[in-house]
Length: 206
Ligand SMILES: CC(C)(COP(=O)(O)OP(=O)(O)OC[C@H]1O[C@@H](n2cnc3c(N)ncnc32)[C@H](O)[C@@H]1OP(=O)(O)O)[C@@H](O)C(=O)NCCC(=O)NCCS
Picture 1 (cartoon, rainbow, N blue to C red):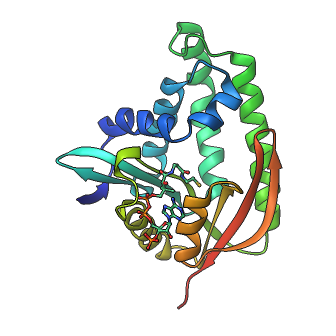
Picture 2: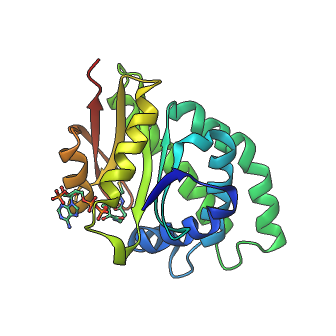
Picture 3: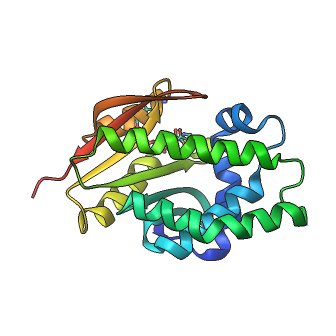
């Protein structure tokens, strides 16, 4: 297994992995039509903004898992919104996200910003990096790939911050098990339309 930064052209397979890994949550937000192109475009933007925070697990050159980390969550999301907003709206009208409701997408983005602000408020005294997301292909889980992606991501963040934060759905026991194993502790909870998430933090030792 090879662990390395994601190439831009791998945003597409990563988008499909993400959609498969978070199907239930995406259905709760968008209904039956899943916005895979929206996820791919988000990952392309993330690649432009913080390429080193996108880490892939590859087997025979095929991406079987990836993690997205940022060393400065506020700056990351502000840059996503600034550079992505108008191109995404334009793509809606060009039909790239066919079947996805524009108003529902805007509502989801606003809800996400509110969720992010509440979560950031809980950890406001700590300058943290963030694990934005990570996912491993279903047929490859339980083999240590998630753990290795997390370790690589933490190595990257450790150069810039003294703590890392993440949000994880309270019923997501595999992910919570993984984060606890690597030293994350719960510091609070945040509610959204799709459920309650734990806010977890890991402090790096000097
Ligand atoms: C969470 C996820 C990334 C874990 O990836 P993985 O490759 O299966 O994890 P690993 O094999 O590296 O397991 C590492 C540790 O995680 C924990 N873990 C993994 N699967 C678990 C499960 N089903 N139940 C409880 N703990 C589990 C264990 O502590 C494990 O260590 P151990 O094997 O020594 O017991 C994977 O389940 C996934 O992609 N889930 C869907 C997407 C998701 O929920 N992402 C996290 C969002 S915050």
